[in-house]
Length: 197
Image (cartoon, rainbow, N blue to C red; front, top):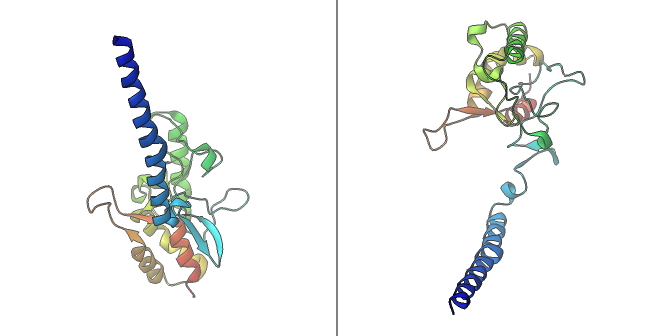
């Protein structure tokens, strides 16, 4: 008698979980996907009718050799695969005193000092360190602003116009208090491409 009662409880639990997790949950996710088509399709960014990226995954703006292109705003470094590889999302997992990490940071600082004409103390941390996922599409407002003069020079634009474009693309903190203001690099570069000298 005791065994049959346990079997009945188990059968009811299996039926409830089958309905909730096997039918109701997938149906709810499907309805949410219909209501939010952009997000359910990967938040794709289109330019000129073609998909140029996703607002959720960063990308590099470099030449074939991996050198930063001066006419574009640069993303933060990526440790995902060969850089912004969605199939290899990860950080470097180096500790703060790892010699390889310190050497990489020093090298990145030197490159930014040279390309953007700033001093090390003006370079924000996100400019020289990769995110935990290695796919972060955003940079800090400070990093975008230190790149503005270089981008303006390379494109023959007024520095003030480029800085104004950066300010226009600053996304405020989540819920008004979480995190820091950020700039989506892909969306900023698309807006930059539309600016005329």
